[in-house]
Length: 169
Image (cartoon, rainbow, N blue to C red; front, side):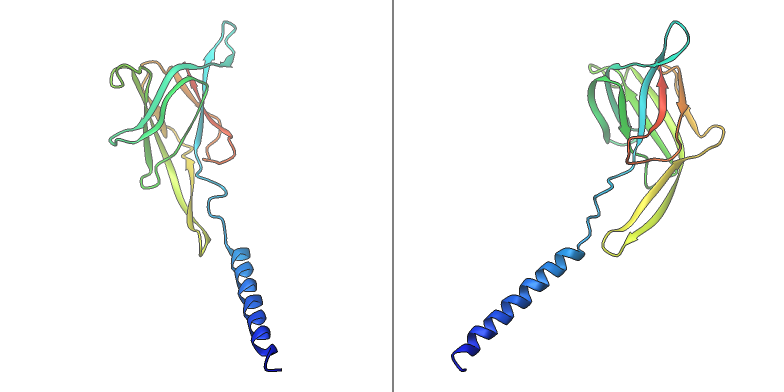
């Protein structure tokens, strides 16, 4: 019996440690499953019959006004762009740059007022932010250098690729 005691003790320890390892992995949550919600903006134009059709921009870079943040960098033949809303303020300002040679010259600016609602996810993941464009007059404004108009199609920022706005050129 004395010879078997160390083997039984070692087997019990290994079984216990293996069980703990699997139990801890089973309860580990993946906080990055959903990703950050964004606004999907589609590039559109009006055809000869007056219908709105999908279009593209030869070049596009999008920055956040007043920061050095590049939200979308040097895209070519852009038909859709996914852009985040600001977590720390109720207004987001995007600057659309259409010229790769001089980013300051050829631009449009879009101002979006929105809600930021923190939502508790779990103890491991903490809080997530639910964001929605305000459904009121003047909540979305833009300059008209190249951008002729802007149409909101869905108010809620999302992770599933739902189109939120149409940029009409």
